[in-house]
Structure formats: structure tokens, C-alpha cells
Figure 1 (cartoon, rainbow, N blue to C red):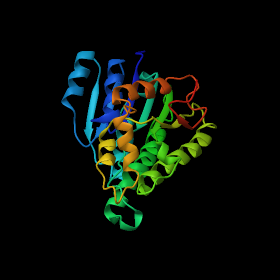
Figure 2 (cartoon, one colour):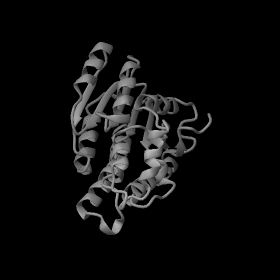
Figure 3 (cartoon, helix red, strand yellow):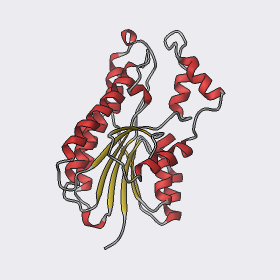
Figure 4 (cartoon, one colour):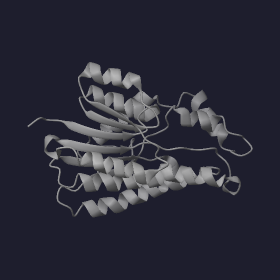
Length: 254
């Protein structure tokens, strides 16, 4: 029986998601990347590493369709060939930082669909489709400190991440009673120099009073590169105690 690992990652074409996909490919994982666009460089990396990369262009603001596609695809695979299968819900959006009273309804709804509905529906699809697989099953939700500490003008992002944390707690309780139950963690990855940080630093100071905090993080060199952050996150994912605390921080001691 072939020893192999399968990892599904949302938001795999840029930032933290892309860095994780690259490092997993180099480690020999089969990877399904779910993003708004494909990344030719990731395809080249997979070819050089001799591993399989599948890239879907999928709009996560339509989470029902995305979850149905994931479920159907997983059911075409032979689960007995994998020693482990992991879903990494990484995609998210900070949108346009502004007080909730001035939020654009369509943008607000989209932020919650991408940040909370999609991870929850994908988790449900993943758990259902892999229930009888033999290998270890894991779900890693990329959360944020803003899910645990509120910030003005970031209500949808805070709400999505707080919801991600709490549904992870609930699913952990469910899976604890299942044969080969999945281990799930909603993990804060630290502060990372990604496009989201650029958005926050470029937001209107009038609408987003905390902009200066993010400018300071950048100016004082306190941001991890996506590659450094990815290595930390994947190290946490590989920990023997992964899942013992369903809401965690990458900086938590082993």
C-alpha cells in the first residue's frame, strides 16, 4: 500500500496558503489547492518534486457549490491509499475596513460567506466524505487574534474568526466520540506580511482608527514572511498533541 498524505488548502494561490502549499509539495504531499486562480509556479514546483498538485478555480463566496464539489471529488478517491488527509481552511478576507454602520451589505455578506460559511461547509463535506478512510483525519482552520480580541471597523472579520473558533470547539466534541474521529484546530498563525496587511495599512484612517498599529508592525519588522509563518503552522499541524486544544495559537508551547 502506497504511503501518502493528501492535503486540501483554500486560498492556495497567494500569501500564507501558497507558502503552505509549496512546503507541503516539497514534503511529498498530494495537494488540492482551491483558489480564485491557478499558480503556474506551484505547478512547476510539484512537477520538480514529483508529486501531484490539483488546482481548482473556485469562488468560495458560493460555499454550497464549493462544498459539493469537494465532497464529490473526495468520494472518487480510494481512501485506503492515504495515511493521512487534511483540510486547511485558509482563505479569508478583511474587506474594506469600516464601521459596521457604513458597511456595504453585499460586501458584508460576501466576507461572512468566505470567512465563515465556506470553512464550515467545507469542513462538513470533508468529514462526511472521509468518514470511512483509514488514515488520520485533520482539519486546520486558520483563525486570527481578531477572533479573540475585537477591533473596531473589523466586525465581519472578527465575527468570522470567532465563529470559526467556536464551531471548531463544537466539531471537536462531536468527533471525539467517532471511530477515527477527526482532530480539528482553529489556529491563530501570528502576524504575517501578506496582502491583508497591505489592505489594513492602506485603509482610511478615518474609517479605521487602528491603522497605525499595522503600520507600526510593518515598520518595526514584526511581521513574519508567509514562508516563515507557513513553516510554523505546519510544524503545529504535525504536533503529536494536535487537536488536544481546538482553539490555539501557533506560539503555544508544545
